[in-house]
Image 1 (cartoon, rainbow, N blue to C red):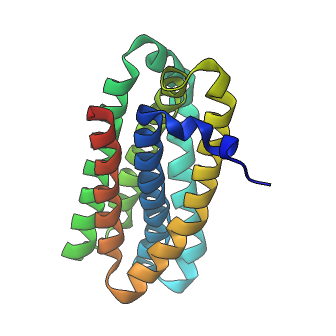
Image 2: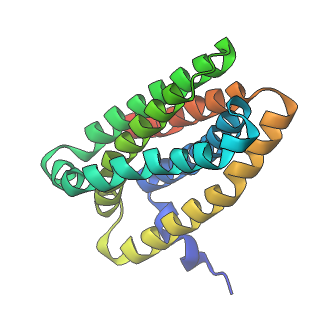
Length: 194
C-alpha cells in the first residue's frame, strides 16, 4: 500500500528538484542508449552487426571499469554540485556531437564508439557525485526514502527511455533521440543552479 510516507523525501525542495531533473535526464540517457544501438546497426552490414553492437557494449563498459577506481575519490574531494554541473554539461556535448554525426550522415562507426566511451567516462564521474549529493539534500531520517525514490526513478527511466527513444526514432530520425537527450540534461543543470 502506498502512503504519504512513501514520498516523504520529495517534500524537500532541493531533493525534489534534483529528482525530477534526474528522472528527465535518465530517461533521455536511456533514449540515447537505444539510439546508439539503432544508429550502429544502420551503419554496418548484416554480417557485422553482432560484432558492431557488442562493441557498443564494450566501449561503454571499459571506461566505467577504469574510471570507477578514481571517480569516488574525485566526488569526495570536489564540490558535488560543481562536479555534476561539469558532468551534465559534458554529457550534453557528447549527445550533441552524436546528433551532429547522425544528421550529417557520417558513416564511420568508430566515431560513435569514441563518443559512447566518452559518455560512459563522464557517467563514471557523475554517478558517485550524484550518490554523494543525496545525503546533503534530505535529513538523515528521510535518506532511506530518498534512496528508494532514486531507485524507482532509475527503473522507471530504464523502461520509459528506450520506449520513447524507439518511438522518436521511428517517427523522425535517430539524431532527434540524441537531441532529446541533450535537452534532458538541462533539467539537472537548472535544478543544480536553483
